[in-house]
Image (cartoon, rainbow, N blue to C red; front, side, top):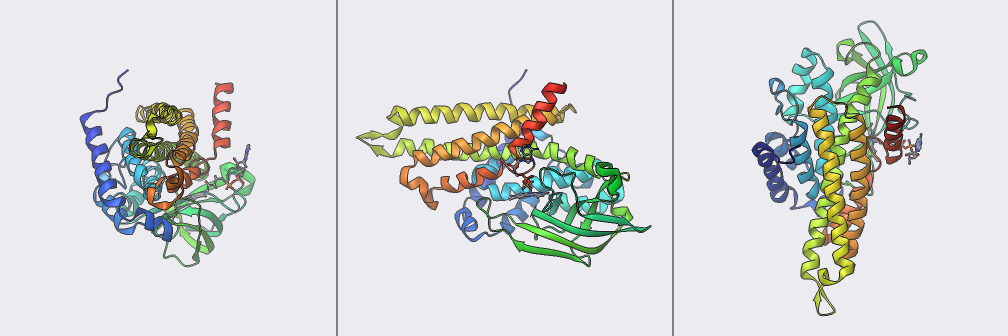
Length: 380
Ligand SMILES: Cc1cc2nc3c(=O)[nH]c(=O)nc-3n(C[C@H](O)[C@H](O)[C@H](O)COP(=O)(O)OP(=O)(O)OC[C@H]3O[C@@H](n4cnc5c(N)ncnc54)[C@H](O)[C@@H]3O)c2cc1C
């Protein structure tokens, strides 16, 4: 067992760290405050190859492994979790889904634009009545020979307005239940496609979350991904990998909050000494450090499982469940270490605490991860 990163991994991690510090840190507080999408920064991330890291080079992707992706996600998330969710959806849901399950024509038409950041993608599974229970899809796509007619509403869609292409999951045959679900590539400009107002969120406020409405949208048959009835499997396989990205996001938020708390504790004095010399604070830092290292091991294990073509459903769920709890705990404690300064925006940790919460909700809540984990350990 080798815990060492390769030189290439270190290079990617350092490039992401530099980018985050130089390009994302300036303005991150204001973007959060104003709910402003990091348009210029995402464009640069595309130019630097951060938007299609794991996709095939043939289609403009970086051809990198999941470990590289996780390292970059962690660094970007340390500074700006709003930017990293855009990166995460584009990389592990949209690009990976299309690269793995799309056909050559779909990849040439769509993936080549998504990997370079020229276009942004969105992944549309959740609905008003179908969140954790993703099989209850109410959106329908009715077969009309050479095309489908799509009707319904999707909720909470990340990159909802900024995306150009949307992977939309819909029910094509209700009698077949989850085997009657398909996934489609939908273009923003198609008639009948409407974007709802932006959600006003607790955290990741720089990201762009919308509901989407489809009114008789005509989707050509060639835009269906995979065989008829493959949509639910497509969504579940894609989300299983996506969870590793969200686990890395949680790890980054925790790491960012910890680094700020450590630094602050060495500068702030109380009772004649730096606060890190008070054992209550020192022990908080020790707990933060240990839990972050433990989360990192779980995240890396899941990434390595995926790179080795192993089964990563269990390791990905464990990584997300644990890392998201660590992100929550560490960011709350980082606010505590900062005292009153932790409660105001200038010190960043209050934003991290708000951002951390979403990692326990999207791409499967913590309760759903526990269902995945318990089923796996009970049924083997
Ligand atoms: C900011 C943001 C961005 C998002 N981005 C996207 C996106 O890009 N694409 C997309 O498709 N979706 C997206 N989502 C949706 C997200 O994945 C769902 O919110 C999440 O899956 C939970 O679904 P729900 O909100 O309907 O909650 P519900 O499913 O209604 O769950 C409510 C509560 O009940 C619990 N619960 C439900 N079922 C069970 C059970 N069987 N056992 C125990 N507990 C249970 C849940 O854990 C939760 O605590 C996003 C959400 C947010 C807030």
